[in-house]
Image 1 (spheres, rainbow, N blue to C red):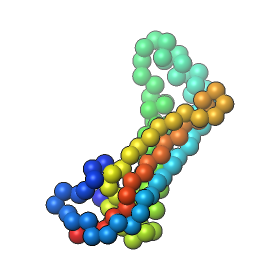
Image 2 (image 1 turned 90 degrees about the vertical axis):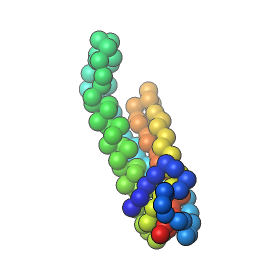
Image 3 (image 1 turned 90 degrees about the horizontal axis):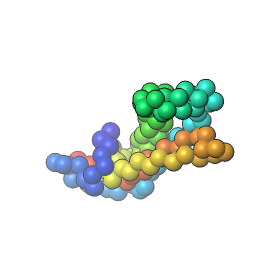
Image 4 (image 1 turned 45 degrees about the vertical axis):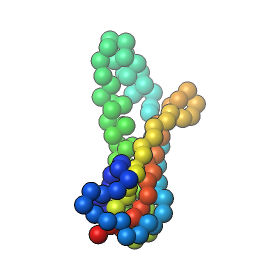
Length: 106
């Protein structure tokens, strides 16, 4: 399945719009991850733990987006937008949402 942030797929013609689709992932970060990320932030390094969690959440959201598009009979998703939010008590949860328009291209 073609997934793109652009409003069309270059070289392809959209023949049918199937509707807006979305995928979401909400992941919690545990106390130890928070502690080590805080220490890493103090010494100026990157937090590989949070980067991995962010990638995992993005992958889950994109998989859900594609699955929902396939359920509508689409073979592509255009205009994809990714949003990131922190949620929960003390911002202990990470949410990634992906949305776009499911289409059929030929």
